[in-house]
Picture (cartoon, rainbow, N blue to C red):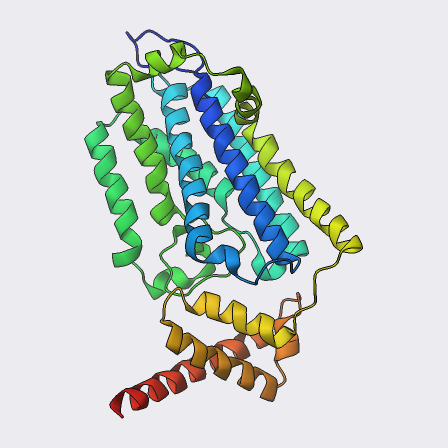
Length: 331
């Protein structure tokens, strides 16, 4: 939705093709990231590669751009007055698609269940964003800053209850293939709304509407106008293509121990340094093998007993590694 629908007294310049193209570019970037993730999933790339470094930053930029454009679209579509019929129809489509993704991943990849991904965030943010359409841009930006800061100051065990995971304020780290909680990601939508207010006052939208996009951008614009359909279709097509390729040219099989160590070190590196992670992951692997839990790690079945066992081992290995690092530092 990129129709300009500005406050009363402002001339509506029509559909802004440049915004559709921008959304199309974000879709292409998303497809590139997902294709890379698929290659990693099937063993053609190192485990955890897309979760660190430049790839991790790339993924966050993609999500931020989508949510920013959600804020822009909310302003353009409803700043003059909320079109409840159109808003409700769009919201139902997004929420329905989000629910479908949760159901599918529940059965297909329960260990990486998507319970609050980008579509869930868009659905919730679309409703919350309506509250900010009439507020001054500076107020909206202040709230955006508070939303970004919230996870650093408001985390609490209270939010560890599954009913509150969507907030992003729980102290425990949640495993999901796509987790985009309200805090801090709603900030990108608020920034989109605030920037749109500024663009409205400076007649930027009118100038963009008059801008003729090059003919080669038409496919991008088409994708941008049908972003939800593209989002739902592209990943099944990509993953099916990689799967078919793997049937003819399978990836070299990597020992499970190597897979575990690499994946563990990638996850650990988000919070600790390399020296700690190397010791910690070695401890995890040795203990899992000794207690006969490694097979369960590579199983896709849900198992609360195994989860509890792994958490206990992780706690023991953390203490053991911290003690070893402390002793090594004292020598």
